[in-house]
Image (cartoon, rainbow, N blue to C red; front, side):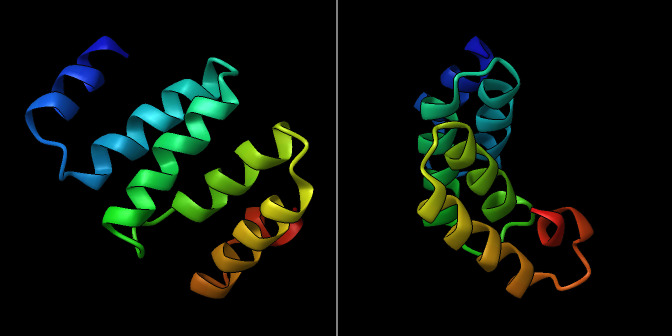
Length: 88
């Protein structure tokens, strides 16, 4: 995780770094930080695959169910074949 933070200091414009760092934080059950990082990835690159899905899961884990529903609906709208997003 420290490596991602270093890359962000050097290149704060790369959405994929925020997304990957967010996934690490999600796996570490640090859902608030995951949501913030993934949200930044969306801000930088709204169509980046998987971002809305994992943002929705992060919000769900934070009991922010309305936010989770909106993010997951966006994930399904972006990729109707995303069975995981449709399941949620």
